Amino acid sequence: MYRIIDNRGTGKTSRLMLLAKENNATFVCSNPRAMEYKAKAYGIDGIHFISYSEFAAIPTLSREGSYIIDELENFVSELYFYNNTLVGYSLTLED
Image 1 (cartoon, helix red, strand yellow):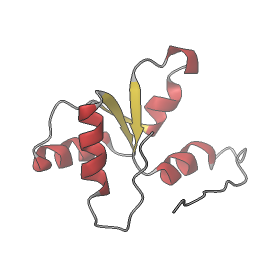
Image 2 (image 1 turned 135 degrees about the vertical axis):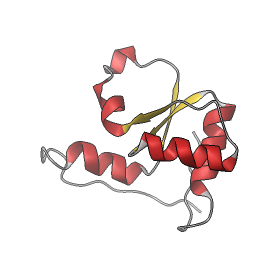
Image 3 (image 1 turned 90 degrees about the vertical axis):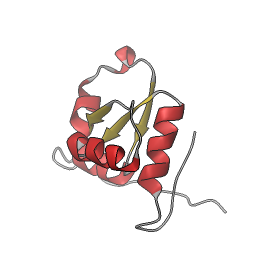
């Protein structure tokens, strides 16, 4: 599994898009249309984009292929914040 952890404005999204293309993975993000536009601006094509909610609607056993999630914390917040079932989580930054 690839993890891209870096500061704002360092090219994380473009690197993630390249990984999606190389691995034929679906790109899961908050705004698929905006990401499609961004990918075109980067000269990257051939990526399928879906929203966080579209990904969540796919039954777990039906998920085929590979997925890449942009902004994992936003993904978790958007899906679970409103129903209050997720109270917290931890994240370990490895050296």
